[in-house]
Length: 216
Image 1 (tube, rainbow, N blue to C red):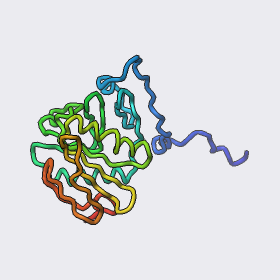
Image 2 (image 1 turned 180 degrees about the vertical axis):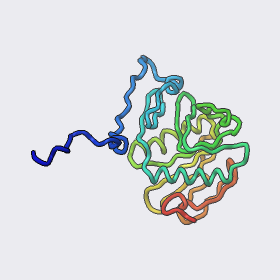
Image 3 (image 1 turned 30 degrees about the vertical axis):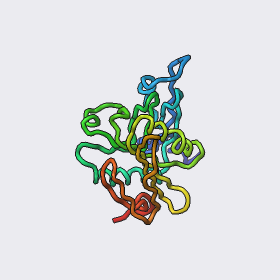
Image 4 (image 1 turned 45 degrees about the horizontal axis):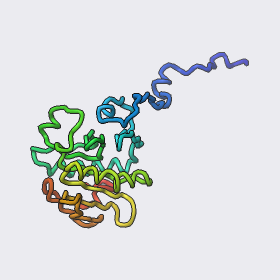
């Protein structure tokens, strides 16, 4: 057509750099086995951008958390890290060997000497506290309320903290200390009240700081 000599179906130089195509899911083959998968198998999995845990011999895949979940975890890491003594370190997510399971808590507090050594995984004996921020959905609720806490307790992790972002008075924070029969609830605080934690080290904060606009 007259006047269309400059038209082309090809993109201009640099267009694909500025507008990359959507990232495709990275698929991989699981190693064949007639038995349950092991922690060793779990550690050999490639990076996929998803959270893959080994629970009761099977791989459980969770999507990346929503932003409110990620912000709550990041803010709690900062609160704990500011109060943390030098012999501990606080990280957001991390591979944790819990019995025969390979779990990834939202936050791990562990012994500094081990974590600074560059290991890819902590054992339960090297962790002093784990935190789970509950995501929406029945499967996530069941993992954070029914499946993972008893495993953490059976492995001897002294403190378990659960953050609930849904429902009335959220965020709500529950703190459990390890007792003779498993975890025992020692504190449950809603947004607007002050939570004081004694173990694994003293720290106080209002759960409201974990959600909503950033406080200056």
